[in-house]
Amino acid sequence: MIKYEFKKVKTIVELTVSGHANYKKHGEDIVCASVSTALILSANLIERMGYIKHIELEVNDGYFYLKVHQSSEVVEQVLINLVETLIELEQQYPKYIKNQKEG
Image (cartoon, rainbow, N blue to C red; front, side, top):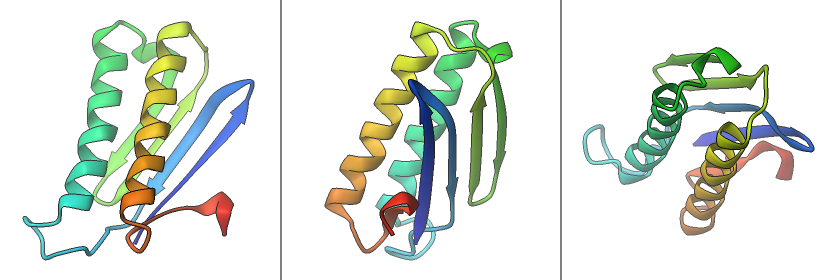
């Protein structure tokens, strides 16, 4: 199961995602692929928009951590979109992805 948690103080300031969905075998797991794509796309967008210095980022196999050091409208909107995507995936695949704040 993929687990995610985000901390919010007016805006999203920290996001941790860990684990593997185990929806299907490696290479066929659409849940893991969807989460990974959303995470990497968001991090790459922040970097390409010139805001990489505003965040701390750690990405490893089955682990993603992002902390905002300096908020901006761009970073805020990217992270809101990312969290909304994770919530939508959780609604579609509740056995495979879970917000830690909910239990």
